[in-house]
Length: 407
View (cartoon, rainbow, N blue to C red):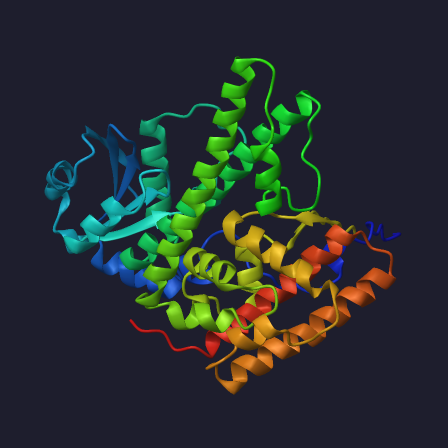
């Protein structure tokens, strides 16, 4: 039979698809091994599934046997109500509680863990669902997850440390402020373009651009008011970004992950903010046993549809953490140029260990050569950058192994 080969894409430029980890959830350790599942069955008497919403929590229980899971009912979103509903099924240590990751966060999981319950937050995208299932209710969801929890077919996500989550919240607040600033600038530019006064130049928001804006006036008072409002919105959002940036720098000084942030900043294209976003979103890099697992978590591995002797690899999966993937791709654009130690990189590497500096230099040499070689094959530039970003994540993982972190 003739083998049908797909078009060559960026996914084939790095050999990472053949043995890659499933993306999005926490590596293989999230799944229960057979030995661990047997041990859990010996100590757990019931598996509890919570369908958590803002105004209610649906509860279903599956016993440690072959009985059909049963629906307990709905309680208010309060940990005391949940404890009361679960008290009739055994002690906290004999219950395994699961609920899907969602907008309600990890507060309930932390409270239940503090009370002695076994609690896992489940990756919703990794739950097995029948393609013929067309009815979705809280009751059905609760019963389904209770059954899957008993069989060990759920994948848990990592519950972040509260200190790490606080820095991540501040980081995401800054990213929201950046998007608001870009939107305000676009609205001002569109307003000026409509009236024949477009902003030109490579740096329209510099001091020269501000001087140009200060001299603009319109014939109608209503237009002057609208222009002043658009301009003030740009100034306010820019001030918000600067304020949050300074707050991030201040909070990072006492953060337990600060040594890792400084170490990752030794890489070309990874400055303080990029390194902080990566650490805040990914957390402890060493929880990934192999860099291919990190690549899968970031959604930088190719999708695949293969059957029989036909093999097809398509676009990257784009699963997992979009924030980390975005800044990593932006950093990858810096490897278009030949390797060199600029003044900024040299300053960022001050005080770092020799293994970290050696890895950063090796990354420059390899990724710069990789970019030029892929470019010589006439690949689309975006495909090249994705391939570079995928390999760059491996160097991030390698540097993270060199940095001991405080508990």
